[in-house]
Amino acid sequence: HWPPKFQWKMAALRQELLSAAADVEPHSAAALDSTTDVASGASGGLTNGQAFASVVRCALGAGVFALPLTFLRVGWLLGAGATVAMACACTHTMCMLVQSERRVRLLIGATHALTYPELAAHTLAEGERTRAAVRVGVGLLIVSGTLAVCGAFVAFVSGTLALELGTSRHAVLAGACALELALCQLRSFAVLSRASGAGNAAIAAGFGVVVAYGLVHTPPARTALRALLVLAHPAELARSLGPIAFNFAVHFSLLPVGQAMAEPAALGKVVRSAFGLLAVIDATFATACVALYGDRLSSNVIDSIGADAARERAAAAAAAAAASAASAARAATTGAGGVGGAVSGSGGAGLLAIVHVGGQHRLAQLAVSMTKWLLCASLLVTVPLVMAAARELVEAACASALEALAGRWRAVWNAPSRMHTPAPAPEQHARVGAAELEAGAEATQPLRSSCAHVCVGPVGARALLSTTVRAALVGVLGLLVLAVPDFGVLVAFAGGVAATGCGLVLPPLIHARTHRLWLTRPAMVAHGLIAVLGISVMASSCYYSAVDAIAAARASAAHHRDAPH
Image 1 (tube, rainbow, N blue to C red):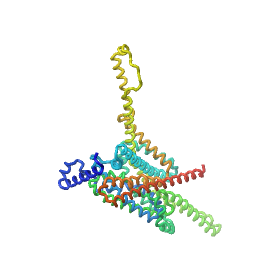
Image 2: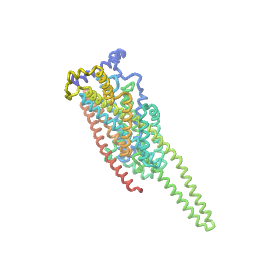
Image 3: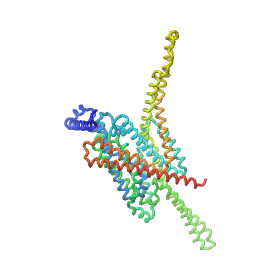
Image 4: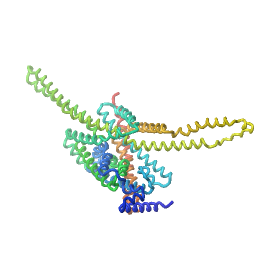
């Protein structure tokens, strides 16, 4: 019942005493409090190198393939500046989040690491109902962001393989959802985790193929120069922040990494180095794609390769036919005696040209196809791992709701009936034997037991609940991609709404709450400005995502209406 300000002050003094005891005699500090690892880090945790690799693995994903179109819209110089600024802001807020989690865990005396919803509930709310509401709100934000990320991956796969196989997106989407339904039912993701380790290799191969293809099939110098001259287009900045935040605002995934580090104080240096490297890679790749592809860029730069390949094959065939016709025209002037040889020579020259063009493109097309299939396979394997966070939250919420419902049912069943029943006559009551009473009690006991366990149930019912939740999430994922098939729109929504909320809005609010006694007024103002920036990014990304989704739906409807049946 102490005031919150006094509680935070006592927690700070307690942490200072523990730190001083650890400096003087570590064994006495461990004996003083069993939660010393909260302040000084658990021994045997992740090293700095392992933490660096984990951060790069979490942040480097398929979202980078949506950046070239973003840089084309906003200008490559402004896009690079926004990427560096987003990396710096996410580094700062990530350190805020880990520091706040350590302090809250010390205050409440928790012996386990806090999840993101638990941290927000303990920090931003007081009272059980308010904390439950905050926990549900943050959980919904995480679930929506997770589904959007998985939807972006499935949209990437459906769009890429539809172009590769020459079939409809709906057919590929149905096959991908069927595969995800089977993979999500696995009770152990150890095999998927090892298989998804090749994801970074697939991303690196995608970088190489995109750049190499652009260098070989570079547009005219005038087109590339026109694209590079657009240094900045500030009007498109609000639209571009969502895809950029998608690659850095991964705080929900990185919080366990910071909790598992052997030296939590080194998290800032590790995240700064990892995000700095990723910012350079993202900005360089996107700028190179703008220069090499220009106006041919699509929301997924991988799809630009497939679109160009068909056009180039048609152009090569047309060039070969033109060369054959020119050879025949030149040979026609030699006279009638050489007509047969001229025709055969022109036909042979055209055939050789077609074979040469086909052989030249066959090897490149094989490399492009292998890279596409590798990327799609790694994303399909990664979807169940990413969806695990949303699945755990939804399963916990459903289990809690069913437990409460079962408790209410048991209370109603065991309560005495409120209906008025006349008391039996003494002579009638005397005729009821003890054996009949015991038989009636034994008959009603199994019914009560079955009614009590119908909602919660033992292990079998929980397995059924888990299976149902996984199937429902895959169904929602399929409907989401069916409604919004554009990869760029889903990336913008996931990065600008869900990821920004967890990466730029909540961390400064949580940190200001946990460290308000030690922050100066300018620092508090800076925390508020970061939160306001995050809220503005969320609002603009939500608006532009809705606008782009509506435009894509109208374009798809017009395409199907004009297509021949």
